Each structure stands twice: as C-alpha cells, then as structure tokens.
Length: 363
Image (tube, rainbow, N blue to C red; front, side, top):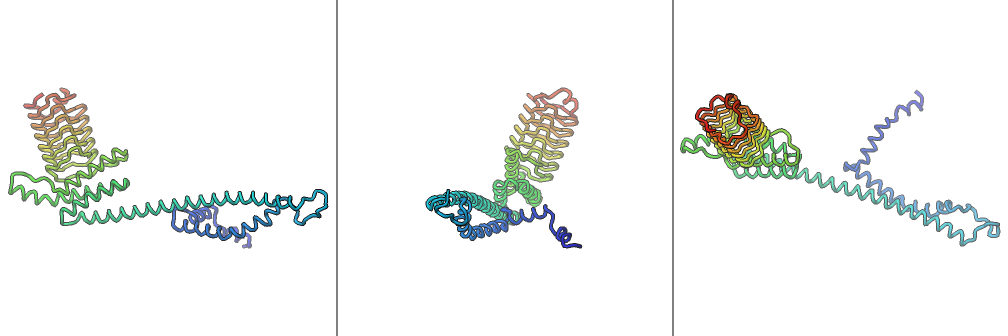
C-alpha cells in the first residue's frame, strides 16, 4: 500500500469530521463551552502580535507604498507628510475592521454565555424537580396520613411546574388511590359494623382524586390531553368530585356509591359495572360515556348530558333523570323502573321500548 493510499483511507469521512467538530464546539455541552472559552483565550493571546503586524508591515503594504523609499526628488514621489498620511489612513481602516471583528466575536461569546447560563438554570431546575419528585413518591408510602397528604399536594405542584411530568404524576397518584383505597376497605368495613353510615374516603385519597381531576383540567385547557387516568376498581364511596375533570377516565368496576359528581366531566369515561348507587350526578357531562351494566339506582341525574351514552343493561331504578339529554343514548335492556323522566330531552319512544322496564316511570 502506498503512502498516498494509506493517508486516503486513514482520513475519517467528512460526516464524521463534521460530527466531531460539532461535538467539540457545541454550546449545548459543558465541554463544548469550555472549548469555546479556550479558543477565546487563545485569540486574546494572539491579539497583541496580530495588532502589531496589522499596524506595521500590513498597513504599510496595503497603503500602496513601495518597500524602499524612492528618492525625494524622483518624479511623482510622495512627500514625507503624504507617506505618513497614507499609512495612517490604512491603519485607521484596519483598526475599524478589527474593531468590528472584535464586536462580532464578543457578541458570539456573549450569546454563548447566555446559552450556558440558561442551560445551567434548566439543569438546576430539572434536578430540583427530580429531588422533589423522589421525596414525594417516598412519602406516599408513609404510615402517617398527614405525610401522605403533603406528598399528594407536592406531586400536584411538581406537575404544575413541569408540564411534561403531568402524565407521570397522574399515573403515580392513580396507583396511590387504587392501593390506598384497598387498604382503607378494612377500616370502612369495621366502621360500618359500628355504625349504619359508611365513612367517606380518607382525606389523602380525596386529595389525590382532586389533584388528578385538576391535572386533567389543565391538560385539556392546554390541548395536551392524552389517555385518561386509570382508576379501575377503586373503592371511594361518598367521595366529593364536584366539577372534577375525569373525561376518558377508566372507572369500571369501581365503587362510587353516594359520590358527589355534580357538574363533573365524565365524557367518554369507562363506567362499565360501576356502582353509582345514590350518586349525585346533577349536570354531569356523560357524553359518550360507557355505562354498560352500571348500577345507578336512586342516582340523581337532573340535567345530565347522556348524549351518545351507552346505558345497555344499566340499573336506573328510581333514578331522577329530569331534564336529562338522551340524544342518541343506548337504553337497551336498561331498567328504568320508577325513574323520574319528566322533561327528559330527546327521549324517543324507540328508546323506551328498548329499555328492559319503564314500569312506574314518570314521563
């Protein structure tokens, strides 16, 4: 192999060279910024001799004067004053050019400094959010309810400060609600044996449900809505979810009996086989919600939006559905025995016939 061939194959491809140069000078990395600073220092070191050369030989050469002075009496020869003026004029031009270049270089380094400061600030904020998130998730496992409550609100603040963490925080809180409601079941059953009243969910579960709804509301307002929260199988009777945003949420097989869901946003939610016995759903948005085989006896659905809702096999005995909108709703096999359907909107005869029973219902 000849020396020329060896050199040809030993030279890295152009794209690799470009990538290495980009990595070396990238302001996005700490090393890249340091390399730029090194280049700046080197330029400053070279500035003094460069200035001497520019104002000396270069200025003399660019002025158009010959290297050796002609005789003063030669035809067309410049006088001493004219020679000095020519050199000074050239020097002034070079100084203006050098000043402009210095300003340009200074602007570049100023921009790089601002980039570095912004990246340092972003990195610091990210580190702080990570630390806060780690502490909060650890506190969710605490045996003390007050600590868990504080962790729930801390996660809510983290999600408010970091939009990209909305979904992660929602998943953490939904897992917390599912796990904690399971733990609270024994306490609820014990309390129910002592009293006829079923206790409301603990304050930390209530807070977590509220934060989940708030995050959902924020996501919808920003147009960054993704999949709904997974709350399948939770047991939170008497929970207060007024005005809560739980659109497209998965709540199938959950116990929401006697829950307050007044004006709640549950459009597109999966509510199959959910227990909503005695629940307050006045003005609730149940547009396109899946309520197959849902239990809603004695539930209050005054003015609820049931447009396109699937109520196949739903138990609506003695439910109050006054003023509810049934546009396109599926009432096949729904039990409407004793239901109050006065002033119901867009409730057709066909829908009534598809229902399992409308005995003693009021129209």
